[in-house]
Image (cartoon, rainbow, N blue to C red):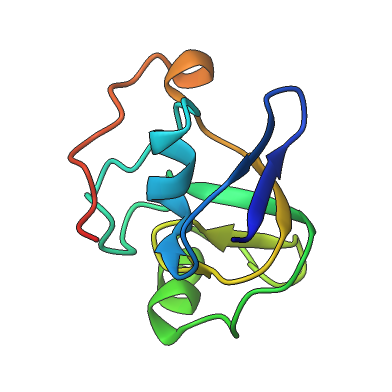
Length: 109
């Protein structure tokens, strides 16, 4: 099983192929997902510290572009759009704790 590391929060194993946003949330990381995992709001973005994910999808590119951000240059990805297939280290950018917002509807598997 692949491992996800979140600095300051620990390392945990997740089922291969699980959406990163759900892996984070299911392990006590209060990542936001205001649009419910539909790649629209970018609140579930994470900084990739180590590991590889599949290429950035068109949905991610469009979401970042609409917010005036460049995903690849900033090492940012939308955790609702990527699946964990190998060990990774990520840092959630927006959380319930640092934003004061509710997480949002749980994304679908």
